[in-house]
Image (cartoon, chains in turn brown, yellow):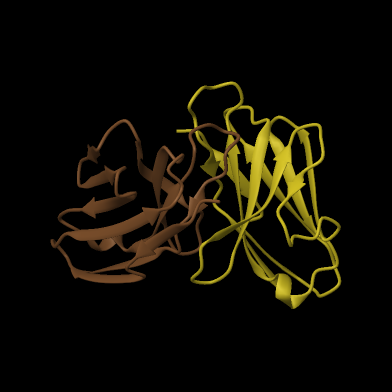
Length: 113
Length: 117
């Protein structure tokens, strides 16, 4: 089955700095890679995703890159703000509703004002 | 985006009682819903896949008689934790995928914090 590794487990940055979270996956069949933000006491919310037919996707301050050959993908947050503080999860799966995502262990991002 | 609502958002119950958690898709129909469990500072663990009109599929190690799942309509799935014990205290999260839409993924509810005392 799929195995997703996520690093770092904790990331502390100053407001305005960039933050990068990295994930690797094992199953070459995986072709959909979502990122979720989970605030304390709430469910995960999809913030950005990427499919295997592209190498990079950007949405304002958030970007995701994918290297299919190396089987790794990363989340980049620029100009971080205190409200970006949360736990971020990466996931990997085969596209389609019948497939279940495999989640990374999460990264706790702390943005200091 | 699609909205998935869970109720209640938190519940405290006495050991030995049963607790029902609801997961509703508010603006779409969902043939399939998923139930997860999350311990503090850990990732999401899939418990079961809930299928409308049929029996749920449970992941290995999850007791189906302990965690009863009913998916009686296209917009509602329920998870009942029977004879709850303190070790069942956890954050339970559902997700739902819109039926019949190509290349769409599941959306998560806001979670239910269960505390068994």
